[in-house]
Length: 190
Image 1: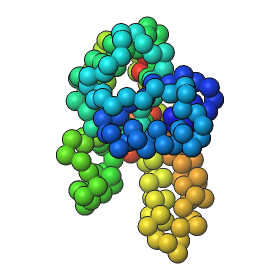
Image 2: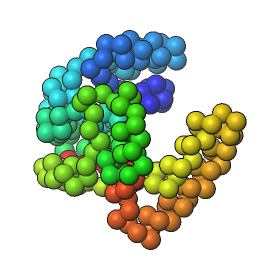
Image 3: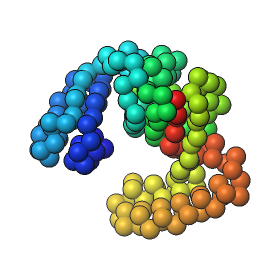
């Protein structure tokens, strides 16, 4: 996403705790010729080296569930401008199929990883002016089976599209089912 936004001319500040990720991002930006409007830093999200009220918009993908949420959300609030928005894509903890998958594949987890528990996450956001979320991958998780069966991989995308429409229908009919989804997009406003 960094390269795409930089390619649109956005001025960006991006960071990662991993030096390897910073090097990889730097290389990708150089290949695309968009390095000049991107500031790259290595730091932890729980201790940001940015001034107060620095950012109008903040994006994160699958990062919050690796962090000390209290510290990270405090820093998020500090660096967001009043009226600013933060958008995060994060896995939720309550999908039964994903819970089983996580137990069967511990080699793909990191020790600090803890999928988001919506109820406790919302409670941590009291200082922010608003929080909303959209959920994805409830029944549509079934389509991912085709990713692991090479001879049937052609069926993945069409099956996913159909099942995502079914998910949308279920979420409209049963809004509380959103809590059982695998992934959510969070919108947090200061």
